[in-house]
Amino acid sequence: MNFQLIGKNIELTDGIKDHLIHKINKVFKNKKQSSNLRLSFCVENKRHIAHAILNQKGVTLFAANETKDLYASADNVLKKIEKNLKKHKERSQNKKIKLPEAEYACE
Image 1 (cartoon, rainbow, N blue to C red):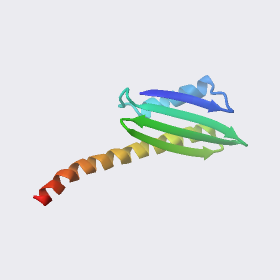
Image 2 (cartoon, rainbow, N blue to C red; image 1 turned 90 degrees about the vertical axis):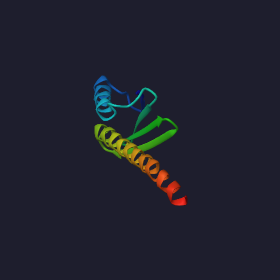
Image 3 (tube, rainbow, N blue to C red; image 1 turned 180 degrees about the vertical axis):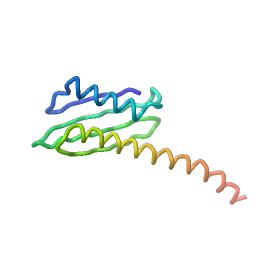
Image 4 (tube, helix red, strand yellow; image 1 turned 180 degrees about the horizontal axis):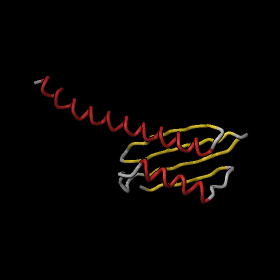
């Protein structure tokens, strides 16, 4: 998996980067190289805003979170993107299962 870490109005220190890399590797341990994850962080008036965009095989998933703590924002946005990915996977598997049933019903 390829990923980018971007900071706007904030410098991403080595500690923050290490924490994020550890979380990304834990959450997306089985993802292929064709997946791209972009994490951007912004600080505005003591609010830490995190955005995540995941691109893979024609699917783009987005998640955002805002808290007073940068680490909490990062963890929550990764949980949201993981949840969105699971929902997408379940929906695509359900469609694959339902398509043959629909064909049999027409015959």
